[in-house]
Figure 1 (cartoon, rainbow, N blue to C red):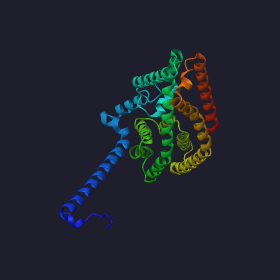
Figure 2 (cartoon, one colour; figure 1 turned 90 degrees about the vertical axis):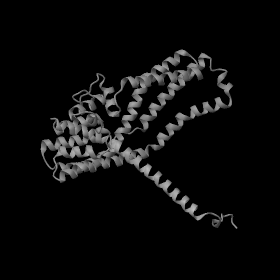
Figure 3 (cartoon, rainbow, N blue to C red; figure 1 turned 135 degrees about the vertical axis):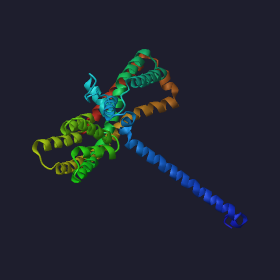
Figure 4 (cartoon, rainbow, N blue to C red; figure 1 turned 120 degrees about the horizontal axis):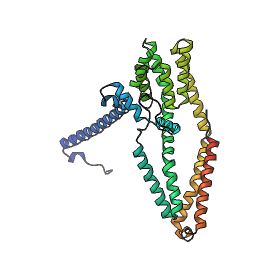
Length: 327
């Protein structure tokens, strides 16, 4: 009556088999997704242990891990440009200068070709390519390092809780730090793992934690290092100090979130003001190609566009200063 199929016309054995096959199919899909999720979690958690799996001794793995982060064999900054070295270390990316240079060169060529195609002029295109080649890697490293630092700051209170529980169970501090390295995912797992290895090979806990704070560049990690130094000099219950440290870090993170919410309007305004000219230019070019096409080859127009983009860049820097609150 309502267009429903007549089930009596079908073989019930085939219907039951079809239902069972559909159920088996969904079970296979679910199991496959769970396996992929578990494998991804295991890969993320054990990423810091890849070097230990590749080398026979922990000392060799520790040296290679340091070198892959842009450090020397002793764990110090290896490059003469210390500021660039800090960006490399804090980004957590494998230090591959040749690959980075090739990617930066490819990005510079794409930017230059796009400028020549849409605007024209070899000299401005060469300048744009040079800027992209030199500044592009710094921008990427700073962005990746910032994202990694935010994630590390989010994981730090949980890591300190693990240390406190391990200390309350009677474990030494080095064992508690190593427990964080085994249980916590990256990036904090790698940082605590390097600290645990340094403590195992002769560094004091204070020096190892201070080096971890320098590698991460996070102010909350600096607070953790200051707490460890204070406990070493004055004594006291390290577990109680770390609990107070954890509470302070969580309160600071809550305040950062409030500041971030308060400045969200300014960030959105900056995004709209930056994107609007490009969207308008694209719409005009698509609807009326002759609007820019008839005058784009005029040198005055080209220099005018270069000046406009320069002022837009300066305006973005000013707006960033206005909405970027440090705590």
